[in-house]
Amino acid sequence: MILETLPAVSALTVDQKLRLVSELWHDVSREGTITADTAALLDERLQEHAANPAAVRSTEQVTAGILALKKHIAASRA
Image (cartoon, rainbow, N blue to C red):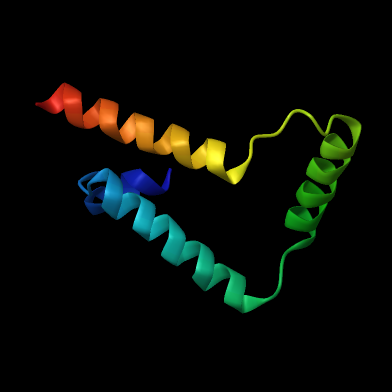
C-alpha cells in the first residue's frame, strides 16, 4: 500500500489529506490520458449507475458526511 511507503502521509491531518487528494486529482486530470483498465472501470461504473441511478449520493451529501466525520474526529480528540 502507498501509505506504507510514504509514512509522512499518515501523519497528515484530515484537512491536509483532503487537500492532498484534491491536488493529486487535479494533477492526474491534467495528464488527459487514462489506461485501458481505468477506462474499463469507468465504463463498468457508468453501467452500474445506468442500472440503478438511485444508488448515488450528491456532492452535498458526500460533503456533509465528510464534515460530520471531521467534527466527530475532532470531538473524540478533545
